[in-house]
Length: 95
Length: 350
Image (tube, rainbow over the protein chains, first blue to last red):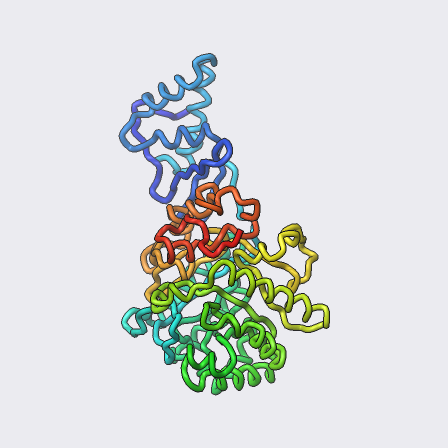
């Protein structure tokens, strides 16, 4: 069962840093500056992560996300979003 | 999310453990030679641990050059060398020295099994060298070169080229051959630190082109004779001496290769005596401090490193140049001359 609470306000844990390099179509990374690892992201994950600023609620971010895919089935897009957020919460990237 | 490991096999740290020096060379990148910023031995060990940890996480083989100032001034140098020997991810240790204080340490150096070279600086034949580095230095470098060679420790010489010694280049090659030096490198003067006053001594692009081409010709000639001397040309602008060699592959002998892109942001960092981290010793813009920052934080979050990594941000002739993969210009030179580390390399002769 997905555990994303839409009223929640989350932020990226301090040990992680997002970075986008503007070459070609863009390269997106998440760096763990504590453990030294880095993760390639796709643009979707990068967009979602960058919205979690510690001030904006999950539901507001979901609305922003939905607006990027006006031609898609909203329920599918919402479920995709919640799955990504849940994964990030489980990994303590989002806290 | 996909975890990513970097693609280069090794990583280079140039670690300046002291600013103290018994010489005061006219072109030195230092302007302060005091003791005040030095770390204690315990602090040095802590930094060595951080370096080893980063290399381990990144699965890199560490090459570390210990230098200064003059590293042999530190009484705990060998304690540090022994500590570095114990770090599994540090595979090779070099020492960059002015070559004047080595004599009493040669036998101790033999015991450091990870040492892969001792590099000494030389600026010309006796008269010219001593004019730049100090009276008596030439003889000490030659003597200590031979002492190191006698115990089979590889020796490198490094030359800092400028208008005052560019004519010495052929003679330095001869000296290197006569003294069985293993590797010879020619660096360009970067007018920073004490050397800032030498901006007018920078070689013009035309003169640099002539000197570099001569060195490449000599290098090829000596190689064809079977000489073991490797004259390294793995720096920016060298590729312009023979652009066809930009296509060379991994099988190309060391002595024949020309050119290499700047390693800033790719596979190297510089650490100063107070643990300040620089992108390169000659680019004096701090990007962190290992007393308070992790190597990972510096490496992944420095705006400067990201700007330099993105070759599309280079300006002038460097922007869009076909030789960027083997050149990209020297960012330190650009900064020293123009104040902008993304500017074109002012010595490029294209």
